[in-house]
Length: 476
Image 1 (cartoon, helix red, strand yellow):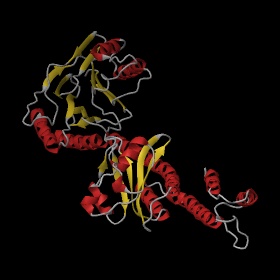
Image 2 (tube, rainbow, N blue to C red):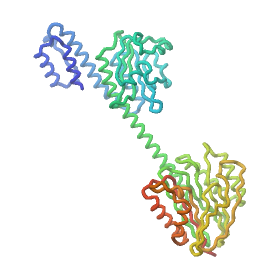
Image 3 (cartoon, one colour):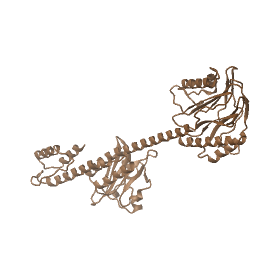
Image 4 (cartoon, rainbow, N blue to C red):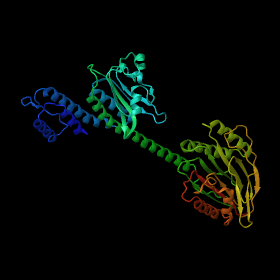
């Protein structure tokens, strides 16, 4: 690219002899072109009239040298704001312009948005001023992808003088060049009014085009850097949410005479708000809590952490289950933000007894399986709305008697929402099939469900956390 520019410069020296031109080319080839060529006064390069052309060539080579130097400055930062400032500072300096601005294409709207402006009225261009495709000089360049050199703005019908009228600035000459990645226009840069009062030239167009080619790559790199940092931040947030969630899950299974317990928690890639807890109420009773907080990510994890703590403490203090649910619902309604709510199922077992009760707030119902009796049941007769939806709700406890050998399955909706490659869900029919395929021993049921679920889903990604808690009444 650079040597093609040099060839165009040499072609402008009309009276130079072929020999002297070849000599000068050899001289340029054999030296570092980053150094400004030195023209000897004792041995003129050109013949009659060549002095002015040679001076013009030297000035042009110096400008190209400066373009090469500042390309490093433009790419010296990955911070987008700094990159844009570097582009404008160098463009304005090299082209000796009174004012300049840079606009980038906003992906959502498809409009040009002013990002950086320098000059006498630059502060009036800030605040996200926008230009539509085809509007004014910059809009035309955005639309066509071709640069425009306007010697007299007010004589060009494409020029929009509205900004001049609002600010008192007088636009004379405009040079406007697109920032392109391959054939995709990502922005527009323009310089306005040379400081010496002359018009911008074709050489100036070449210079700004070269600068904008480097600038487009720098802008794209800075944007990619921002996306990478954003992705890393999301990963860190997800790791934090997962650590919060795991820290509030029980680390060991409880002990209660006459019962056996086991649990399984399988997080999805995108953290949800699943939780479960074992709450020792006194020496003879144990509460099991399982539920799901609406939403995902850090907000859901933090809300879950606060909720499980509140519920655990309140369940120990409040022995009346109806008052417990009423108070925890009021708490969630007060603390809920952005419409978050909680589904839960709370079940209390007694030592050496099959007598139990449960409270359901918009959650999946308990499922019972007793292999020795061949009995399968879904307890969906009692329940109320999720917590945090409406205050002053009443939740009535449902009581049940468990026969020895009965296993109680408590699960979150991740179990029901698991999909296979055909987009099908297991449903209660699938759960019943998996349970009936073996014994009702809690460990056996958990192992069978995990294997069956894995075989059902295959390679389909898991969309939600899956939490299972199993309690088997073994008899007194």
